[in-house]
Length: 414
Image 1 (cartoon, one colour):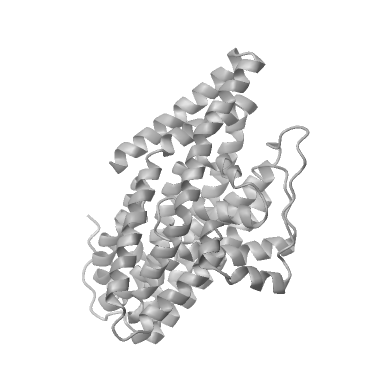
Image 2 (cartoon, rainbow, N blue to C red):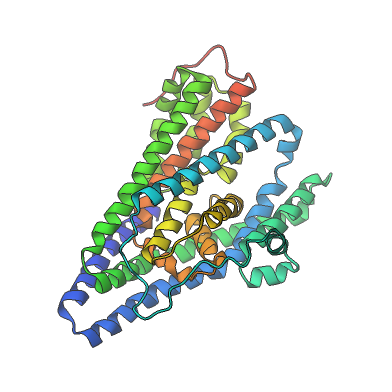
């Protein structure tokens, strides 16, 4: 099913460009406007469906994840070190994405705001400390879910999940209900994603119909800049691995080569999880550490996705002629650091986080359509980077815990 969906997405991209070009070249202005409206409707339907699932998806998946973190309390020291590393690398990834997109400026010149339309500006009314705290804590979880306030939903879910983890019996009936609800929402997400090829077709057809084929050069810059940024992040991760585990890094790269390729080809870092779990102990990384750090990492340490969140958000802003102040950029980093932890492992989670960020700054969530057309190609790189980041995290934590075995099994890379 996943490979078939990937094929449909690629086909939708080709057909979207072709349809947009034909609309731009061969239809008169009035007829083209009707087609462009139809293309945009496909994307709008998809975005609306994503909005529909955001609140319950974040709430149930986060409560389920935190509710099972009693092991983190039991091995407190390892949990604290792991989370410390995850936060550090999330900040590095977010900052790197912001620096690279500001340096490369891939979206400048797209001018996507309609002529005569008032120029949107990021809303700064929530940037006082008092207003931020008021916005952070929900006065009503029902209202927060109705308004799709992800930050407030994350805060509430953290409280509930932590309370469940602190109970002696772990509230098994509640956890079963939450896990079932989380599984249902993940399945609903999969169903929504089946509409992705139509949305991608509409997004590309609309932008090419409006801007012409030269817009593809801008998309090439965007994708090239993002993959160059990920290359730098890989260098940073591998360099840090050398600092902590030395020459064993070469063996680590041998072990993660196949899982990273699997994640890249399927656009799913979860697909690589079983191979990582069995492969890392063969180079001396304690199986106990691996079994603890990897699941935690898949919830809180998605370096590729972090990089994409800042890179894509600011690219969208550039495409619409929006400038963020330095204060707003710092707030964006903090906001993404928190909200991104709520839906890790969810298909296309980055899109949900970026939409929430745009909304927080008072910008239209529909602007996500600018990157929707090429997101599938970028998701492949994000997934592979997430695999590398979690593997390095497991190795570093094992080193800190003196859990690198003296006797190493041979590496199996075949």
